[in-house]
Every structure is written in structure tokens, then in C-alpha cells.
Image 1 (tube, helix red, strand yellow):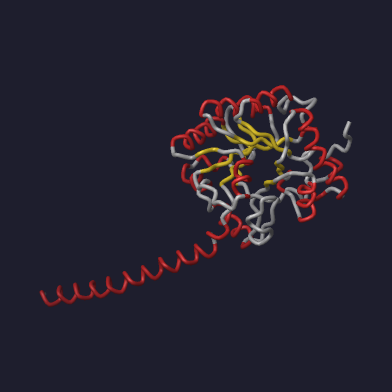
Image 2 (cartoon, rainbow, N blue to C red):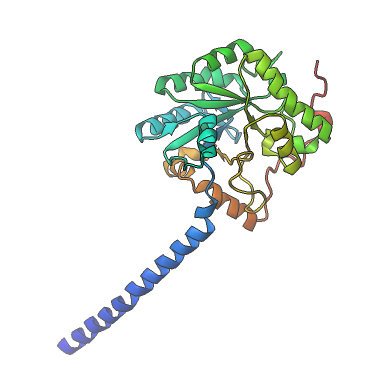
Length: 300
């Protein structure tokens, strides 16, 4: 009996001696794969993208999240040592060649919907957070859906929000004739500078739709940087000041681990890899865009 117990113990010891090195080898292999497949593809900075904040519930619209969820996220940033900075601050630091601090977070908001003034702006003031707001100027008036020029001036003058352009009418620029796209890129900058009395150096591609030609148009129009979305790995160069990746914050961010993942710097490279492996191109909603039903061609 004692001999059997002794032999069993010896067997367990041999298994442990084999298992530990095997585990170490597996861990090192996975770590090496992670470092080679993910870490080099981290974006320039942690840039979050919000569209609309609802007073009650986000519903099924992926572009809308609940106000309470948004407030919790801003509280989390404030309590855990994150520093919200303007996108222009990231751009200027990047140009010096210095590393962007991991604790820097850029809050970006597209479309300047009225809920930005009603729901977002009060939360920014409460926590002293900074944000970058991208505007398509020809969508603003006359409309009850978007901020007024007076509200945008107030927001700009607060020192908490910087303004960028988001195209003239929010048309996907890759679906327009090149002369039209070029003019809308230029005009969106000119209109915002005239209306708000401030220099506009930042651009957000409507729908995240761009190609090499559109990017060169943005450069030529005098913008210093531009932001897009997450694309399949290999579609574009990853560290490009004229195509900085953003993490779209949807209702799935209500799970704390998911929001932390979005802040980790690894969301962009992992999602980009998955999109490529699954054969999914982005942005997905541009192919169905119809210029005759989705665009306003008059500039009056």
C-alpha cells in the first residue's frame, strides 16, 4: 500500500516537472505571438469616438449610448489617473517624436448633435474634461437636431472643447467626384473658421471613409491631422497622423472590462486583425450610400 502511494507521488512529481516547463514555453510563445501580432500595431494615441448621448437609454442604435453610462465612464477616467487632452495636443507631441503617454485619452464627438450641448457638455464641465468636437457645418441650420452656432461658440469659448471639421454635409468623400470632395473638404474648414472665429486644423472623415486621394486632399486643404476609424489590418499604414484610429464607444462599453479594453491601446490592433481574418472591410455602410438620397448638393 505504501509502495503504491510512493509510486503515485513520484508519478505526480514527474508530471509537475513536465507541466511547469511546458506551461512556461506556452506562455512565452503566446507572449511572443502577442508582441509580434498586436503590440507593433498599437495606434498613435488612445482616441475614443462618441456620436450621440441619449437622456434615457441607448436603445438598439449603435451610435447612441445612455447618458448615465457616459457619466460613469467620465467618472472612471477622472478617478483612475487618465488625462483627457485635445487631439491637437497629441498631434503636436507626436510631431516632436516623443511617446504619447499611455494615460492620455482623447474624447472625440462627431456630428455636433444637440445632445452634445444638453448631455455631454455639462458632464465635461463637472469633471473638467477636454474633448474634440467634429462638425459638418451645412447640417446645422435650419435644424433642431444639431447645436446652434451660438451654442457652439459657447462650447468653444469654455476652454474644454476644441473644434474640427467633419465634411461640409457628412457625405462619404470616397463616393464623391474628386473635384466635389476637394471643395467640400476646403469649404468645411472655411465655413467653421468664419462662423466660430477660430482656426480649424483637424478633420474627421465622414463615415471613416478615405483613400489615398482623399487623404492628400485633406493635407492640401491645410489640416494638420485627421481621424478615421478601425480598418482591417494592412489596409492603411497604422501610425499615420492623417488617419489616426479611433475606438467607437457603443453600448457594449457598459461592461467595465470592455471599456478598460478600449482604453488599453490594444483594441485597435486586435479588432483590425479580426476584421482582416474575417474578410470584413470598413466602413461597411458606405457601399450602400446613394448620393441622390443622402446628399445635399446645394451650397446655398
